[in-house]
Every structure is written in structure tokens, then in C-alpha cells.
Image 1 (cartoon, rainbow, N blue to C red):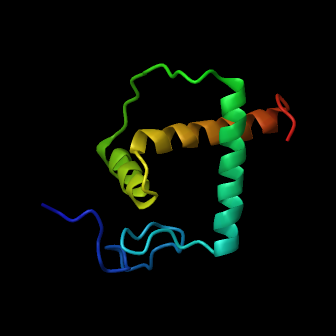
Image 2 (cartoon, rainbow, N blue to C red):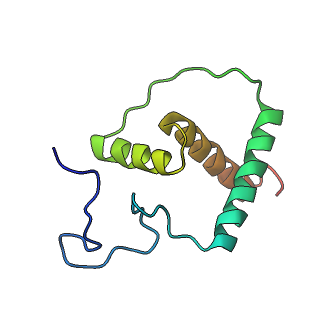
Length: 107
């Protein structure tokens, strides 16, 4: 069985990883100010989501390739949350950004 990550900080190509890539041992390499800014933004979006939609959710089927699903699960584990919860957060955040860009909502 292969490990989820390569302990060597270089890809097989020999290039260093991008500093924003996830290292499952260390987590995300974010500046603390950037982390708290993103966390505040996430909280704002989740509060907006609670106001806009009722508390119940509707189950749907979404298909992902294995690599994408593995990446999602690793990132969710690093954030100590479920991968489906993280996926919902990603969708809500992106919807908010796109609605802002299209002028559907005001920032």
C-alpha cells in the first residue's frame, strides 16, 4: 500500500512543491494573518448560508475521480472535519464569490 504523501518535499520531477501545497505532516503553510482572514471569511459565508437556507439538506450524488477524492479527504483530515462537510463549504464559498462577481449579491 502506498502512503498518502511522499515524505520527500520534491515531486518526482525533482521540482520543489508549491508552498501552498498540503503537507499532511505539517498541514497548510499559511501565514497566521492569512489563516485568520480566511477563517473570518469562511465564518461570514457560513452565517450567510444559515440565513438563506433552511437547516435541512438534500442528499445528492456527485462523482469524483479517485485522485480528487483522496485530495479532498486528506485536506479534510488536516482541518479535522468530514470531507463532505468540507466539500459543502467549498461549494458555498465559491457560489458566494460567483454571485458577488455577477452582481447577484452585494459584498
